[in-house]
Image 1 (tube, rainbow, N blue to C red):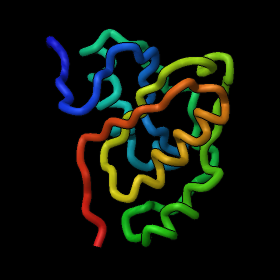
Image 2 (cartoon, rainbow, N blue to C red):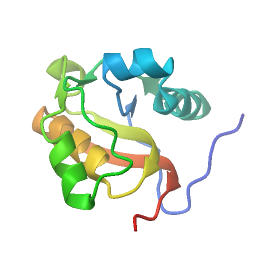
Image 3 (cartoon, rainbow, N blue to C red):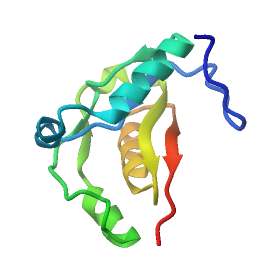
Image 4 (cartoon, helix red, strand yellow):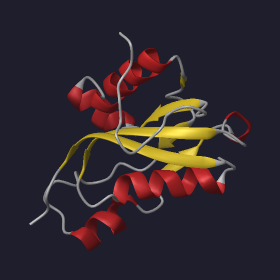
Length: 132
């Protein structure tokens, strides 16, 4: 596969691909993390290192689906942490998620990554949902 093309984003210069993590209980319920599947394909297509162990979801949160914008933000606040700061420090990271609705989840992930030394965090999603 030659790679994916993105009209408003250049993936060149990014060192890490990271999926938005699921809490281990949600992963056990679902049996898979769709963001890992997407991240694996983007990493492979662009020959960028995939790491799904650095960013961890430490809090088991309610599903975001039926929550308001404010509830979504509150729901994910403090839900993520970086397992190994040295592996993210100074790196440009592409964060992968399946659906972008309000951006609460990826915003919280990016905040935690930047707080732990990431030089830059870009977000790629498969779909954009409209919240009513």
